[in-house]
Structure formats: C-alpha cells, structure tokens
Image 1 (cartoon, rainbow, N blue to C red):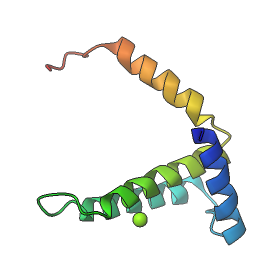
Image 2 (cartoon, rainbow, N blue to C red):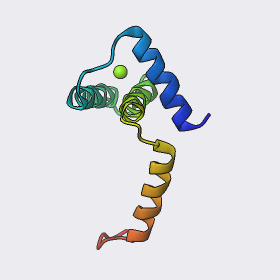
Image 3 (cartoon, rainbow, N blue to C red):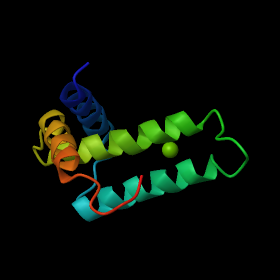
Image 4 (spheres, rainbow, N blue to C red):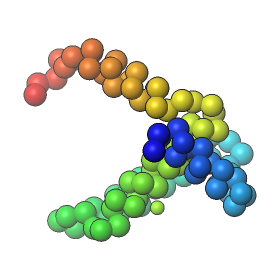
Length: 94
Ligand SMILES: [Mg+2]
C-alpha cells in the first residue's frame, strides 16, 4: 500500500474516533510520547516484541500530521532521500 494511502486511512480512523489534536504542536508532542514508549521497549539487552508496534505508532502519528497538513509523504520521502544522498558524508567518517 502507498504510504499516502496509509496516511489517509489512519487519518480517517482517528477523525472518526474524535481524537485529532487542535494544533500541530500537540500532535508533535504525541509523536515524542511514542518515541518515549519505543525507548522503554529498548531498556533490556534486546528490544522487546512490542518495539515494532511502538515504531509503527511513531510512523502513524507522523503520517497523521502529514495528511492533515496536505503533505505528500511518498514524494517528500523520495525527495529527501535523494537530497541526503547528494550531500555526501558532510565531513563524517564512515
Ligand atoms: Mg505506543
């Protein structure tokens, strides 16, 4: 499935649930909370089985913001990866 379609489906579900935030700052704070949850799943020697779900939560919350703001994440991700690759190492050692 195209990432924009996933974003649309997730956005529609969150809207039906009445859970959308009023500001992008609130929505970004929830991305940060999901990052915290992912961190908690990595406190042992190996990430837990729930780690993958927390990564999914991070992505879904980001996609929700993107859809809300009319951002084409499929195109944006491709363009950003190309931009990163053209930048080279920027002085960093492998
Ligand atoms: Mg979570």
